[in-house]
Image (cartoon, rainbow over all chains, first blue to last red; front, top):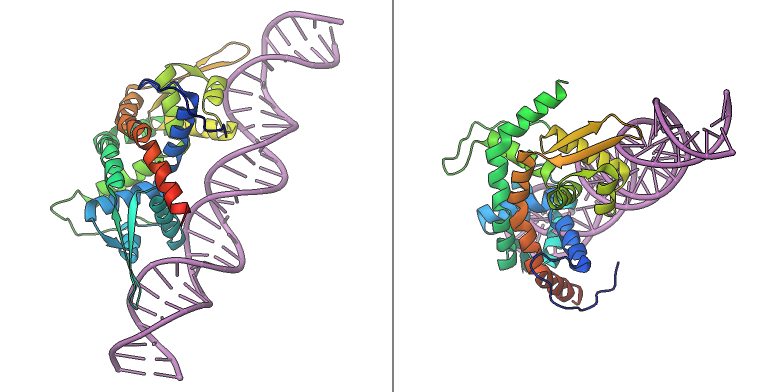
Length: 129
Length: 129
DNA sequence: GGTGCCTTCTTTCCTTTGGAGAGTATAGGG
DNA sequence: CCCTATACTCTCCAAAGGAAAGAAGGCACC
């Protein structure tokens, strides 16, 4: 890891290798399968409890859901509200930052919907060789 | 992969669950750390050879680079050109589909650049509790 | 002829990550 | 007194991923 020095402002192209490395690290963390699916679920439903999330994000294990939510909370993407009652009740919702990330990913979901058949055809053609 | 769930229910406000499942699967495959970084490298540099990609995508192992490129080629995102010379020369470039995916991810990169400091501040605040 | 080189994978071995399922704490209901 | 419901937490095992050596095969050098 390079030491985080402060340096001059860089144009939007961002040729600064340190910024690029940080962006790559952030991309690597945010472009996680489970993070995306949790983000999608919270975007669609607003406020969700732990078990509701576990049901919506089909295939996720409890361990990964906990871990993903902790990470997203640490990154400031989700807000966690604990109601001190028995049985425990915890609610998750996106922060403003999380919602903005969801909007940024909007184009990717649209791409996936629009190009599903093209990807499937490419796979069939590739496998048939 | 777990067995695909069948639901006869068709909510009017959302898509066909089969389409949604396929989109989720595609998202899960495309939203891979290495896929994104390879996509970024090819977007920025156009045509790249194997070793050039390995150098640009810092941290990737040869196995993962090969695997990621095969997968992207299978999905129709990358075109692979083999020049039958010695020593071997293989060039990789994005297909039109790959470029369109890169454009779809453009918003995510902009988000990452724009919100780097916000994420870092959120992490510091979270860790300092 | 033999040796080593060059490049793009491929294979082997080992560490890390992720999944399945049981365990934990707590209070109210039966 | 035990069962249930909830949000984790822990343990064990399988799968994914990283490091490094090997394969292939014409070519230059000795």
